[in-house]
Length: 214
Image: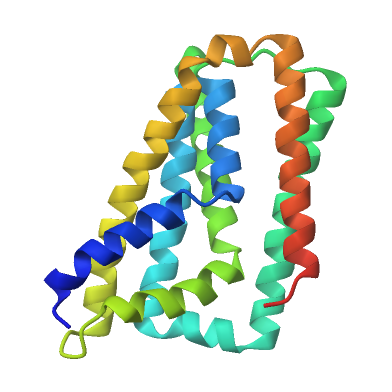
């Protein structure tokens, strides 16, 4: 199998994976609803940075060790579930007490905006990195598209860059669509409803990650 001939199938698979509902989509939509497209950018970049780290681990063989190790898989599963529960509970508490004023990140003082940017980036990065199912999936996914005569690490890194580029375009497109309705989402009643829904979904995803095995 030649790498060039396998690229169309790879791209189709990446688009289908990106469109699947999960923690990444919930985080992006919530961030875009509250902060607009600029506020969703660090979340998207954090998620993709975490994905690329996992892809490099796949190329180096480390992800396979994580996926095969019961202890490592359990630790990541518990950590990932705990973080999703934390984000979900935080959103539910925000819905209960009423939202603080929200707006584009650049509407805040520069130092506060920088902290908010890195906090959003870190949330996305940790959500992706602390997901053992992502590691197990990528261990099975990437080798299918790496020709036998190609170096595994370099080819996986290249394919991962392509996946990251595609997902950034798709996720930012989604954030732009949601962000256009930002004024509506930032109405107090709608904001509380949005926090309640996204918090419930994140808690549900966290519980599912915690109780479900491989």
